[in-house]
Length: 448
Image: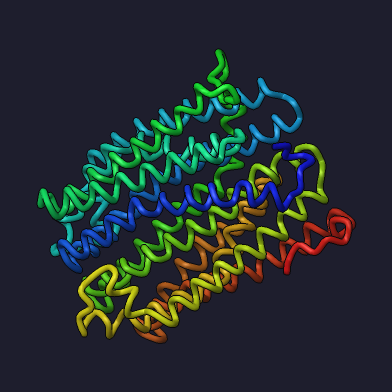
């Protein structure tokens, strides 16, 4: 497999299935918990889990900060035949993740209850949220190294190992969810334990790549560098921001829904946000499949091949978004029933919410792809602008503005509005980028 000369479409397909499988199964860690907890505990359980989700996004986001940031730089270095430099990026990333794990242990371990109240917990949900959250905090290193190693192993030309690792972890998580929640009657704690064990299995399988003959991931002496850490952090910040901004949005939605509807609104949003995690996983899978191909060819100055991969990625992302939107419009009742007992009270809120919210997936999948594209082509500033606009400024503003105008319906309209405004911003940024280059990448259209 030669990333610099093989057909770009064949390479993309070679990476696509393993990448999507890995990212999709990652979402199962949360999705399986939600379904099992919804069926085993009820709407309050889902509401409590939705309170804890921002913690998971922080841990996973920090893993991606050093994973995506370091792996892209490593791939670019490998593309220039600078293998020792690439290994130093890996070494720096490993040390950074280990350090951040320790910091998160201390910070969240001593401030968990206060943090969960900040995330939107109420007297009805705080006890359940703490039971899940304390175990999640214990698994911090596992979540961070899982996120980091997935990207590095994939970029080291081992997408199958990444896929198998994450799938096995996901399957174990689902099995343990059922055993611990329904058979052992461990409730929220059982769901959290299953998630930590599943992620641990993923890390073990990913680590097996270190013993393969094709492994280029090596920790080298004097490999840590603050200069490299700075580059990794800058380049990976957009990936971190994508994850963390999801947590911020969840917090703000939780707070607003408690205000306008109560805990039942948070439960409905828990159903939607978990569906959104699946959509994001598919979008990230497409983006991560393209990442090593784009980064390596960009490092070798093969811009025509970069453009071809980008075009393919955008079309696939758009197709996924359209299909997901149609599913939401056609079967909102079934989506609700998959998580909880569909009572009249829940359906009166969830059906309209799902139909509105799922429209955002059409633009969201493309937005995620371009955020990763700019990161892979060493343009972290563009990626940063997109992430901040989409994940923080627009969401934070509209989630408070629209409900004042339209009530609870305004809360559901927030994300479609945010995603479509963002895609307009991306078109503007992409136009500027092409004009700066002085030509349209040898007349290849990037946007469909």
